[in-house]
Length: 100
Image (cartoon, rainbow, N blue to C red; front, side):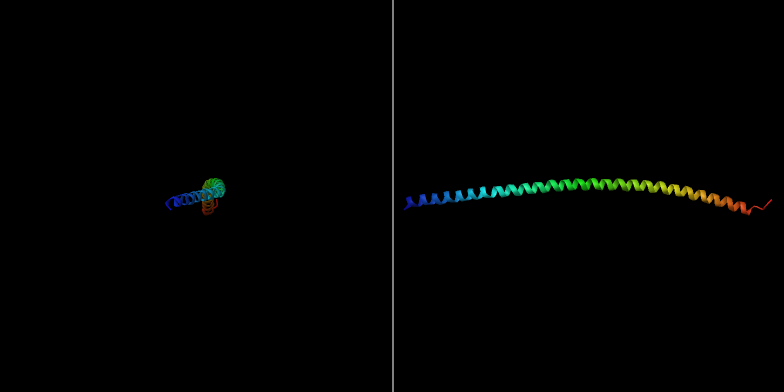
């Protein structure tokens, strides 16, 4: 009986090995397809991230430019205000002087 059990046991082990190997081959194309999809998504996300980084840099540059413009305009307004105060002062002084 021992002799008949060994071939049956070998046959079962061989059948399990064949089934396991066959299942792996069937899963390989699906796994490859999934890996390609994930890789493609990763590339798209990297491109989107790079574009967002460029947009952020453009916005930062725009903020810097706006701040510089605002500062220049503020200095110009301060100079104009000082000039206006000077004009007002001279007008008031002229009004206070007696007419000759």
